[in-house]
Length: 239
Image 1: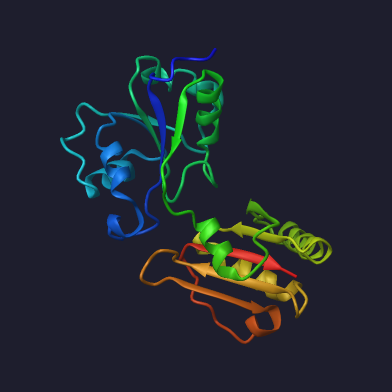
Image 2: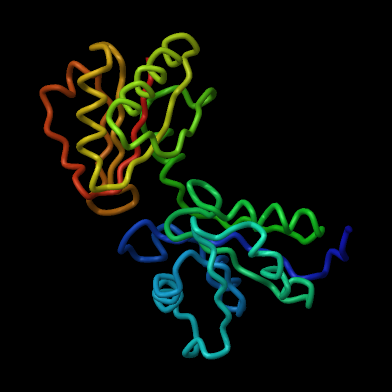
């Protein structure tokens, strides 16, 4: 059912990827919109409130509604989440870090908003996945984001070998991430099971003062000791 274009809009709100001045990575346009929203869909209420306070959100949140959307939320449990839009109120879908809907469960909300004809407005903000890709020197015209690789070693090694083979056959760049405390295990699996000439990029602490982005062959990485333990890191493989 298509709705009037003046009905409430769903704003896709990016957040920072670490402690950083808001003005460095977000336009003032975002803040003006966010400060006028009182209904939010978020992964974690505490971090959402912390972000809002950091950009000068007024009040003490008594009149603000937060609906939880995380990896445990089922799509059927979100059927009433868009109720404020039906009342012509703006809503914000907020990522825990970076932009919503990339490595983030927000797509089910956006899908529902499309289904009912609400306007969706993506706000400008940083995506670690895209920042890593454009800084890697790898193919940015043919790439694939794989999310998380398997945790168990045999399955992870098998997947890494499949990725390397596809990169060689297609010229495609493959992008994936890991829980920060498992970064070194993933790095070790890659350098131990990929061919020497395969390219690996590690993009760590993107947008932060400690940001570090390096692209090297597997052979060159074997002589390195990357500082990625417990630090948000994007991994990219290319032939």
